[in-house]
Each structure stands twice: as structure tokens, then as C-alpha cells.
Length: 120
View: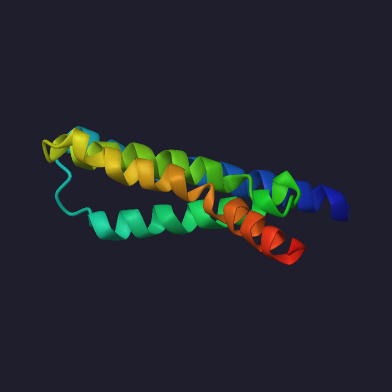
């Protein structure tokens, strides 16, 4: 019974996360306007999700403990692209997305530097 409850909680969390941003994305698409969406807030949320996801992957936690974060990140990236599209600056999203991709490598790089320093 306990395992079934845990499994239900895991999958219900994934289901809720899969639909969390969809109303906001559909409202932006229907209005063809991103007014009212805070770009700094969206970027901060996306950065937080990416840092948490990278931490979980780096320390090899079980996938079910963080599986909702890739779903949330995909929705945030889609919303970010919508914001830039409706503001008339899709190319403006490129530096932000490049920074987020580059940040994926910061934690392993830090560990590599520390390991290198410890060898000397």
C-alpha cells in the first residue's frame, strides 16, 4: 500500500508539472502578446530549475526524485521563446539560452579544478 501511494504521488506530481505552464503558454499564444509576463522572473525561475536539475544529475540522485524539472524547463523555454517572439526579438533569446547551456558545465568544471588542485 505504501509503495502504491508513493508511486501515485510521483506520477501525479509529474502530471501536474506537465500541465503547470500550459494555461499560461496558451493564453500568450491566444493573445499573441506577452504583456504581463515578467522576463526577469521567467529567467530566474528557469535558472533555478536548471541549477537544481544539474545538481541532481551531477550527484546521480534517482531519476524519479527530479523528473519533473526537465518538464518544467521545457515549458519555461517555450514560454521564453513566446515572450521574445511576441516582443519581436526572437534572436534576443539566444544569449540567455546559450548561458543556460553553458552553465550546465560549471559544476563538473569546478570539481575538475578542485581535483586537479588536490593532486598537486
